[in-house]
Image (cartoon, each protein chain N blue to C red):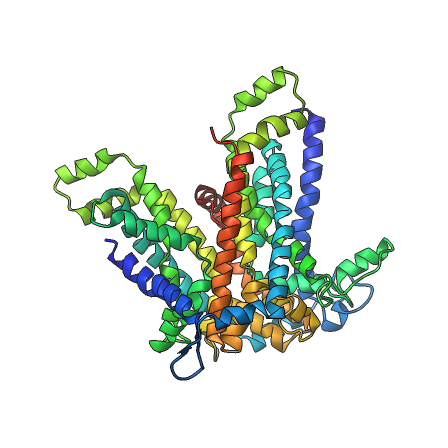
Amino acid sequence: MTKRGQWRIHTLLIIAAAFMVVPFVWQILSSFKTSNEVSSLPPTLFPATPTIEGFETFFGSVPFWAQFAVSAVSLILRVVGQVLVASLAGYAFARLRFPGRNIVFALFLVMLMVPSQLFLLGQFDLMKGLGLLNTLPALAIPGMFSAFGTFLMRQAFITMPKEYEEAARLDGAGTLRVFWSVMLPMARPTVAALAVLTSLYSWNDLLWPLIVTPAGDFRPLPVGLASMQGQFGTDYPALMAGALVCTLPLVIVFLVLQRQFFAGIASSGLKG
Amino acid sequence: MIAPALIGLGALYLWPFISTFVKSFMDVPVFGAGEFTGVDNYTKLLGDEDFWRALGNSALYTGLVLLGVPIAIVLAALIEQAAKGRTIYRVLFFLPVVTLPVAVGMVWRFILNGDFGVLNYLLSLVGLPGEYWVADDRFTIYAFAVVGIWMGLGINLIILGAGLQSIPVELYEASALDGASRVRQFFSVTLPLLSPSVFFVTVLTTISALQMFDLVFVMLGSINNTALDGSKTIVYLFYEAAFVQFKQGYGAAIAIVLLAIIMIATAIQFRLQRRWVNYD
């Protein structure tokens, strides 16, 4: 393309990218202002006297590390559980013959279409009945199973050449062994996609944690942050500092692993 | 091998689904067993002003967020044509996707604040009047939609970018030989061949927009005024009925109606796709 054409493309893209970035810049700058300064008119761009008051208020009022731990552990449980359960089932649907396979798989597909809100009441009753409200299992367990993950893994296994499996079987490997040592390693890109999407969904989820952590300090970050807004409705520096701190972990992971993130999303095509 | 998945899906998805369906025909008190009331919950919904308003809000929000799809198409095409810096652009556009929706809602609420928000200040610089974008229910849904488009752009760009990369370069070379301009190429080569990805993105955007909850909860969370009453979405209404007012039966009926709406919207999109989506 001509130099001039490239120049035009970059101008348009830079303007659009600025729209994406400005809210973050504003958030960061505001988190270092005093609460008087954020509500003064006209607004200042850079903090007049940079202060970490907002961060102090945030860390003083929210048990950040406890909530961070809740978010992180439930993310790990969800990712490990989802990958194991979905790849086992996906493999079975792709390669094994058993009675009722097609009917059960059709059921999985139907579940894909149903909005998650439809399950919330029953899942809540179940967790409450088992006495699991305000616990890690309540947060993590529903996220460990998904029709989507099973479907994704099935698609990966179904496209793999049968020869590898047959060779392993000739060497005397059983079904589980074939799955674990031969098929699962070959499905690594899809496993990565599933892990990325499960992580995104787990870290950002609000509605389910809101429902199953009704009391106390046991909450993941999004719920903690949302409840902080109730307490400090107008303390914008503290809110911006909190929003920034809660966002950073996943943003850092994303920046480090962006290639895998994009490959994962593009290959699965799901949004969270 | 499918046992874990079957047990999990049975207990956590299939059973809750059935129980929600059953509950939608019941009056479920906070304590004690429920009582069957037939279609009472549904007839009550039909007469509920809040329900119709929430339905309208969700429909308006979804329609507005779909305007983000053409924006994503143009940006994806621009990024593909850029000789350098593609990764940087992708990363920048993707940042909102990896950001907590709660944090996103807070930041935008601050930017859109009617008294000291920076948007109103910028508008005043060019002589336009400021408004209470979030607190005034004439504007709230539009404010949500701007944030919704902003949040979803990154993921749509990735899906559309993957679609663009699968278009053979020879087609562009051939049409360039025939003297087609870039704009002409976009409309007669790119768009038709990209249509399956566009369709996919449209369906996903519709489904997720109909389920929007977080922005209402965060941007109007501690505002107890007409803005919240006037700007609830269907899922927010469901949450409020089932988990704040503890009217489980009524909440269940709302959830079933949401399912019906999503199925109808998806079915319509699949029917319409025959007219514009191009499969080889």
